[in-house]
Image (cartoon, rainbow, N blue to C red; front, side):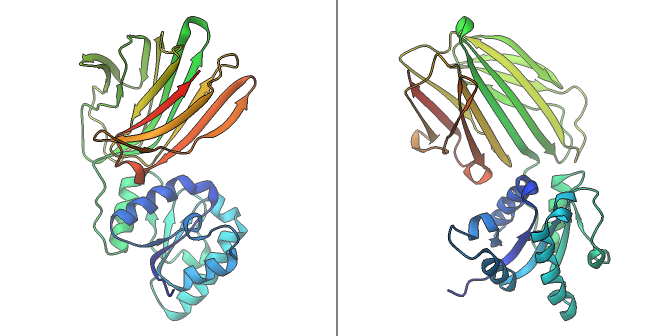
Length: 312
């Protein structure tokens, strides 16, 4: 099949997180994207697939960073495309700057898209260069980590959220988290901002607000910690988490104490009352504890909730 792409992405694997975000946003804008982790499957010739992807793509995006400069593979990709593009006088090579690493000599004459201080502003530049209009939401969650730990003492569960986000425009109030539980949180703190706990039918809502207006195009990190007592121990337990409407990626970790290991655990997405298989769980151990991890990508944000269910 003689397939073509609008965009080829060259990057270091250490920058995978931001590249996945850009990939999702470009696809949402209607562009076809060549990305190695999607286009290359087990058993295929990596070099041949990369060369074919480069030759069949209209634009070549080089995600420049310190890690990119240290990647021999990435440098070979860049050298290959530059020799072709520059000799032909084309404008198909677009540098994307992720940090303050020096720009390669052959790219210094080209204007770069600047992601160093703002994802939204950098993506707006990139979309314009690709002939598209940026359609990012005003409130953009760049990355989120959720850690849930079941503690044997006091039948306690602790939740820790670490969320990085950015806004376009000025806002004075931001709702960041909803806790679906009938149990009153025993300890809650949020940094930065102020926390309000609201009782609504069926669950508690935790709202974090900011007194001063949030500055435009300034990535912020917010941490939330809360504890719930008497939340596990029944023959069948579950926990479910509301997925934000806009995020780059979300990593969830669920830890069980060594003497309280579930016999079975599964995940399911839910939307409008319908359930489908959830994210794949990776199982590992930490000392005597059993740990399950999963990752939710932005293209799965169509689902509003993800359920974790287990049997003791």
